[in-house]
Structures are given as C-alpha cells and as structure tokens.
Length: 90
Image (cartoon, rainbow, N blue to C red; front, side, top):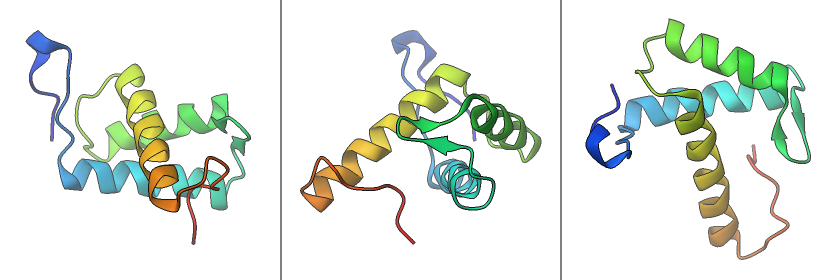
C-alpha cells in the first residue's frame, strides 16, 4: 500500500487503501461532524491524515489524499447524474 509511479507524479490507490481512506472520511463526516459544504474541515483532514498513516494506509501525501477524495466525489456525482449529489450516502 504505497504510492508508485513517482516519476509521473501519479499514484496508484489499491482497493485496501481506498477503502480505509473512505471509511476514515465517512467517520469524520457521520460521527465527528468534521465536514462542511466543501468537504472535510481542517480538523477532519488532520484526523484522516494521522489515522490513515497510523493504520498503514500507505505513503500518500496530503495533496494526494485531497485529490483522491475530490476524484471520488466527482465519480459519485457522475453516477448519481446530479451535480448536487450528497456524498457519501449511507
């Protein structure tokens, strides 16, 4: 579970890392309320970054995690067919 393809500034997120990352983001939103209309709050991101690394989620940078969440939100909105989709859904 680590960032590869550094020469291209791109990362490969394996399913386990993605699942862990999403679980942490959902926990911040649903249980800790560290979420606003833009996404995770500063405290939410701090918690996700720390916990992700503690649980062995890989060596992704903070920017790579931010980009991953934005990409996943866009994909969910595409599936929903609505730019106003609320993410994540229970």
